[in-house]
Length: 378
Image 1 (tube, rainbow, N blue to C red):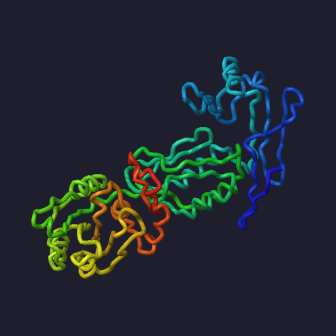
Image 2 (cartoon, one colour):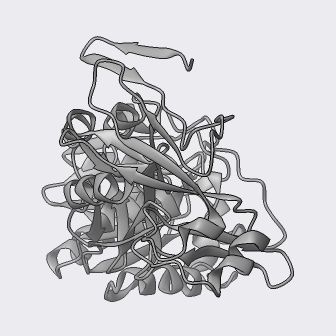
């Protein structure tokens, strides 16, 4: 007998997807599971004798030669004589036929009910197929959900709810979550329990105006050419964010403050300051940012590359101090913070202190960001 899994708000019984090692007494065998809760009746019939009957659940075909894996026969399909050879090749000697009691839900209905609950803004529900439903992004943005609520659903071992990493970018048409139950049916009370979780959503990118303040006497005097601007423009294009312009400053605190303040007056919501972010005598950018802002959210972040990233707030705008690593590496801590700012959920200082786990970029030859562990800083 499968184990019983106990929780304070109820007990979950683990049920297999179908009967195993069933004695076949004649051509037709019926098993009723009755352990005090309403249970389905499972009838098993040899495939040759199932002709003319409706299939109770999707039957999966796996074809290694063509690479196909999916529902070859869907729930409700009436088995025909011509189907028997293929069903045999699929390894189906017997077919289940289900009769659910009033307190139970079929795997398809269970997944649909939870899907309707978990489908928040920016997502659409697809399926079920083979008992599985999928939440698909219907716009570009940042996937957002409660980690605790996903754990709450999966505390019931018969629920299988999976997602892409929280607070990472998704694009329109991308699967954000997929879920199903393990057995062929589930008590309605357990489905209702899972529906207490809060929905997932895709937060849209806000087209916040941005400006760049580039610090360094060598760049200000034209000795060295700025290499960051083309990279920044490419990053901003993802968010549909207008770029207002760039100002060059020497290593002078008042000049940096004046340049950033001027862009704020022109409507910039995000000011990106590059240069002067280290600990040398000429590195004055952090002090300038702190002097002009209402709050320093964080001064450094445990992420490499990009450890010297700084974020501060002035009224409803943000000022970023960006280290030199953003010039030399394709992806740094800057990308994570820009995702959060343009989605409207800026990270807190306490939150970024937890980014160290997985915060070391692997510097892959072929970068897959944001489809990698480095991007998943929730």
